[in-house]
Image (cartoon, rainbow, N blue to C red; front, side, top):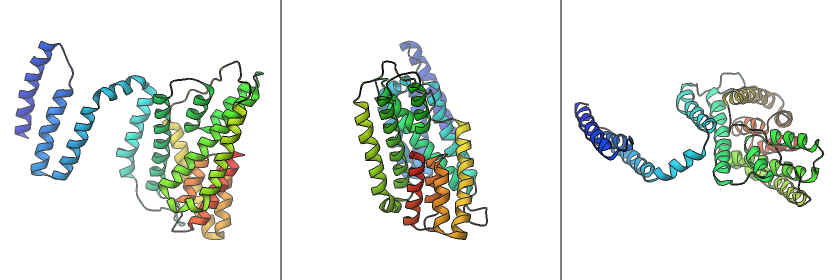
Length: 314
């Protein structure tokens, strides 16, 4: 500790004089120097493997500094705040939650529910940021696809309201179909991450649904485009209130699914998943997936996910 403090003092004084001479007041060099000293200490007095991994990550971040600066300039405060919320959810809240069921049916596990909430938020956030960074146009297709990464239902409602103003409804219907395609693809991605064994029972049917939405979306979009630009709802990748509502709905549906699956078997799980799909297809899918291997089988869970997708799509 004394060596670190001495090094920090000498290094900071030197860098301050250098910055004053060069009129460059970046703190990156100071932080990097202190990090290198700390990682060197960790390699000697602690875990050298952790030090090696952290050193590699530090070098990668410093090497990508210019790219990161450009990306940061294109992001808004709302998007950065969402990233901070996601970080707090993962690094602060998640480790504090109990990782065991607290209900008689084994459905209400606080750690799992919060973990799946983080997973869903992260998928939406990464997709949203990718659209923001890579999408250079503000056309209706890009708006519909980027909005569907957050909520396909919100996009569909916005398109429906636009159609009331007398705009040609066919391209609007095509954009809504493409938004539904994104929603189905997002559910399949969640299934592949959480419980890949379920894909065998629901993957072909989900692929057919997605292809159907995509085909009709392209055909409808080829019709005359509307004169007015569609005003998609301005939403952040996610917000805290929406995440808390998602976690609450997930907890309720997960408990009901576990209770019904225990009492009346697969039919209860499929029925509750279908009803849950009316509200949020992600909640319904995750509630069914987490029961695989304990109360239900991958095949039954796949049918439950398909029921949620079908009802939500309709």
